[in-house]
Image (cartoon, rainbow, N blue to C red; front, side, top):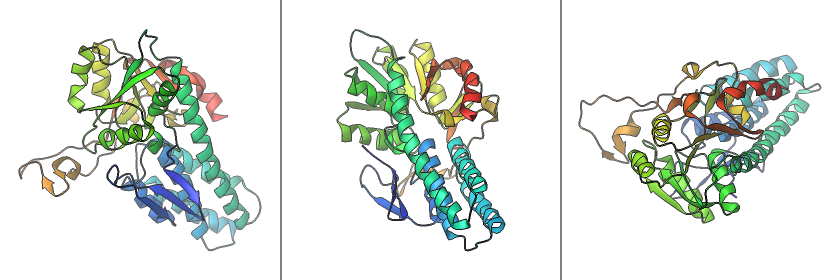
Length: 347
């Protein structure tokens, strides 16, 4: 199993996803500032993985605070939270994990040293819980995948695998479970422009585990569906509104429209921590815009002439009516039924 975030020897080990698939490099993180930079530069990516990394970042920041005064400690811890919150605006797991760490700090009685120890325990719990959650998502996905006489061919977009979580994955968790149960023939992976997470990361994960994978460019999906090559689409999400609208990597929305036109089921796989019940619909989800260099340059090679203008949103929002079901650790639900889980999740 691939584990992108590991606590070891009083530091955090991250697989540097910007170096894959050509190099497997592990980065050692010792401070909250280093963690913020790792999240911002996409060394670690994927909403659940970002949440786990941020939880450890909160502990690292707490460890750096040199005061025994509880009130001063909590004030400085809030500054650590602000630093980490500013890294990626769309992934709600980031904010959820930070809020949970702050709540732990405020509710823990005792000395500052005891609060710090409790924060480490909470970060480790978030890590372990996410791994269990992803395994449950994968298995719950088996119940809603199409029942076909032949083995399934699935299509995914971006990377929602072990690298994007604490391990196992959300969308790729469903793929892994289908492969384990002998129900999967092949995974088709979109390349996912402009950062090529599908080409670089999803295919890498599949190759590591021997899962048959075929890479296609983002504009081939409609042709593949028309040819009957795809039984279902399974993607992840970085934030889901209460009505079931789901934000995921740019290009997901168009993929959902294509799937609808070809009567192909479209599933979103994500933990309940990705659902932002404070947002009534997807129009309220903040969309991160990234550096346009991702579009116009590959390595040292310029792809466009001078004078071109650029627009580089990192995410789009798929309306709930295009989603067949949202697969969570608690089962698969119609998008409109998510709101029924609000009280249960809050508890």
